[in-house]
Structures are given as structure tokens and as C-alpha cells.
Image 1 (tube, helix red, strand yellow):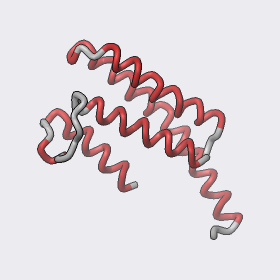
Image 2 (tube, helix red, strand yellow):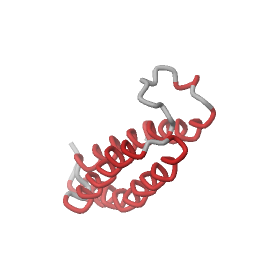
Image 3 (cartoon, one colour):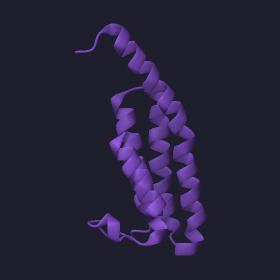
Image 4 (cartoon, helix red, strand yellow):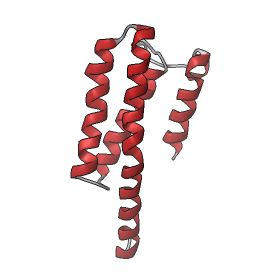
Length: 115
């Protein structure tokens, strides 16, 4: 069990992380929109990307530092990274065999999943 000073410090860190992640969420959405002409995925970019960015953003303002906020951010990052990696609806069972265009997205996902 954590002591109150440690809990207060962690809560401050969680709130700062939320402030950092807010622009990242929207930057990923903008990147998804920028790639829609290339892959002709306008509707999925709007139907998945907009709520995936808006819902965690709403929780960042309503529940800063809460576990649900962090969970929603991680779900949004996973959705955007999978979308930007160009999985085209396929289940990713072998990340090492992905196309080179997704190497940066996989590196970001791996870095975030170990953090």
C-alpha cells in the first residue's frame, strides 16, 4: 500500500502525463486523417479516429490522473497505432513480419507497452 505523500506525488505525475498525452492523441488523429487519401479510408478514420481521440480527451478534463483515463489513452494509442500501421483489419500475429512502413508505429507501440 502506498503512503499518502507517495500517492500525492504519483497523482501529480499522472496529471502531468495526461497533459502531455492530450496533444499526442490529437496529433495521431490528424496523422490518420492525413493518410486517408492514400488508403481511401475516410469513414473509418472519422468513425474510429474521432471518438478514439475525443473520449480520452474528455476524460483527461473530467477525471485527470484517474486509472480509467490512462486506460482509455492506452486503448486510443493502440487503435491509432494499429490504424496507422496499415493492418487493414487483419489481426497482427507476427509484428516482425510487418511491412517496413509500420516499423515506426511498432516501435512506438513497443515503447509504450513496456512503460
